[in-house]
Length: 183
Image 1 (spheres, one colour):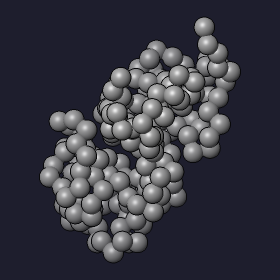
Image 2 (tube, helix red, strand yellow; image 1 turned 30 degrees about the vertical axis):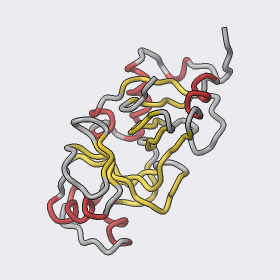
Image 3 (cartoon, rainbow, N blue to C red; image 1 turned 45 degrees about the vertical axis):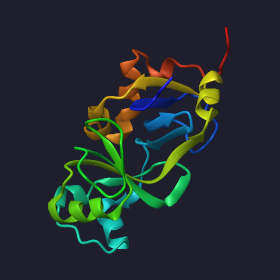
């Protein structure tokens, strides 16, 4: 099973406050574990505010007002930029031909000057699973999975992303039980 470029949809019974009612985009999944970012939990910080904190000037008006997101409980003092197009940056994890996750400052500097890459979602922190951990959580019915669609990440408002991902499965979130069972 490879869940790279998939969404993880937290089931209603998810008790971990880091992941309750979250939609996670999986940027990498292999034998060593998985890495992703929560894409539906904006924090009280704009991109302009983040750039001020790291002393990067920003001229891109529309971009400046976008929110920064809680990406997950790992390394919350570090920024991660989920973006398309992929581009060439110092420290990027290429998810596919369309999307990459970058953690180097050079992408922020380019964004501040040119507003490129054009579609971005910036998080503080990421979500990570050790080898076998995500598979165990899936076996415990903690998550639903569905192949990701880029427009949900970059074009759907954050408060609608979880519902949009559920609709890819043909499921209404309000119809899910918070009690897990096994057949």
